[in-house]
Length: 376
Image (cartoon, rainbow, N blue to C red; front, side):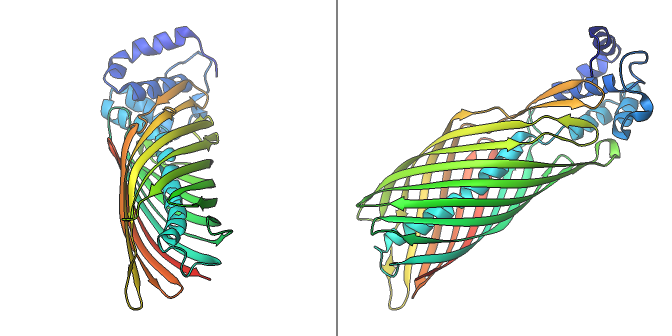
């Protein structure tokens, strides 16, 4: 919808005192809403008031009566889900898949290949809790993900292991009165090459997420559905010492492609975000043999840095009205990761429990995993 500069000037002048008291993003949303309602721009090229969404009409009334708190809360709730949240959900799933792939290969390497001559089938329960704190640029969010992964791998030679897997995840996220439900499907390939104490492992994955969002700006229910595709690749290389420690470094890539969609009030344009991350750290794993059981404690600590990271921005058009752009708060570039776990080997079975945490400024992610693997 096109509108004149005069319209914007008149609206800005009319509601300038109120808009100045709002956060910049909320003021932009309210000004866009103003353009879309005839009540605020009678005689200009905008949609008729009887076609306005009830949420827009309620925001119009709040702005006209000078109810700043209600108008700003309504605008904040109306804003679409931050792409930082979508990116963090996708990143959390890939992190869990990466741990799946690492453990499938590294545990075999620790045991020196004993009891792992042909291949293995495995299943793993997944859980993740992620949280971003609120700030002047974002409302923050909390997200809980649970799911299951399964797959199989095989030794092509004494030095090379390859495998494939599938994971289903469900995420429930909450952000300032906005509830988001995500069903995710992920397919991935992984492998390791270890001819000596030096090793390299890799992961490639594709994820499809079906998002359902519900929010209530001005106590008016607004729903939306959209799809997100994610593509990830990781390469890690390291050197194992005889005492069980290993030094390693790696490169990670993640592309998140969110399709355009409408929630009945506004149209959110498609958006792509990609992240290149470097990693360096230390890992420990050492087997202790008992009479019938082998215990393998393992732990890792690493630093990460996003040397390429797109800003979590979004272009939005209020239906029949103005455009605005969200400049969200992207995750801090520097991060710390750490985790620990224990694997119990009984005959052909490996049973494991693991914890992994990822920490950045104003963001944290906690993962728990239970695993069972049958070697044949």
